[in-house]
Image 1 (cartoon, rainbow, N blue to C red):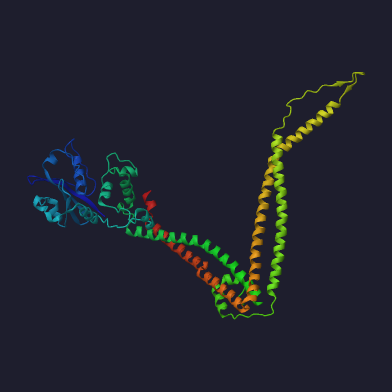
Image 2: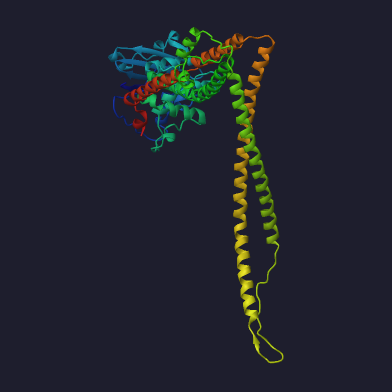
Length: 480
């Protein structure tokens, strides 16, 4: 948007207009000290909605009654005016360039009360003139929950003013650009709005980012659900396998709906087949006895392994106690640092005896062996402890298997008791069929293939949005 300042001026108490005129491009204002150069910036700032009156006290403030600025925006002249101590502002648009250029119209009579509006509305109207019509600058709508559901502050003409008015000692620093803000929060807001003032971002940019972040949140949600559903499928698989075995033991026949893996791959097809399946019961079937015998044999094997592992664990724990005691005792052994060897002679024949050299060498070898054992004792202890953990895990596994087998044995024994009391084979078989139906319905409801499809679709949308934002805006590159 092309715009420039045409006039900055005041109307004094005698209804005389004092102003300077500027043109498009670079304008240089020079003059001696205290001649009003700084006042021009403050008048401009006042007309752009400043709530503080910062025009330097002196001749201007003693005589001025109305402070005004004329901005040319495209083909329209926007006249802005304020009065000292007044919480309202004058805004009017003029299309007659010759009339505005003469400044003859800017008498007190021009600034009628009808065009003075409250300061908040005044700022919004100025922002509208500059195209600041963005109403939502949140990149991620989920962050609003931390602000009580409120949107982030939108760019205002006051933020735009700090971008237009720069310090004379400005250096290339984004924080120096916004030196006018004493409050850290407002300064950071204006820095975030810089991409809007530069024309790099519009409302669509923020809406597209909101859509992108919403999709990314959906992606994370599905990615968290998939492992949970996979675990539920595994539990359902075990449940179906168990009920299939129960049905076989009760009826003596199998469900003709496929293997467990086939059922998991196509749960809906298996459910449809199961609903059409008619229960067939073999009255003379001994499948229960066969399964019961197999479960008992399996339990006996695991109990044997459990006892063997317990004996092994006891041996390892005994070795650990010995190793710790050995290490503790060895640490307290005192041994000489030096030894002196004297040659011995026979008191009768004065013959020399070198046996002491032999035993001294044996003692040296023994000391070296002991030092080596002391050095290795910590490693020996570590190996024992590792083996202990390994055997404990084996024992836990055997116990779990025994518990699971006992449940299967109890289930078969319960079936036999129910048959002995009041329930028929058909009723028990029907119960198993209903259990499988319920499990299959859960599988159909929580089918991970549907989530995989939804996840792929979301990823594709995310990729397209990211490419669109990058190609259309590429703000990071532009701000470098």
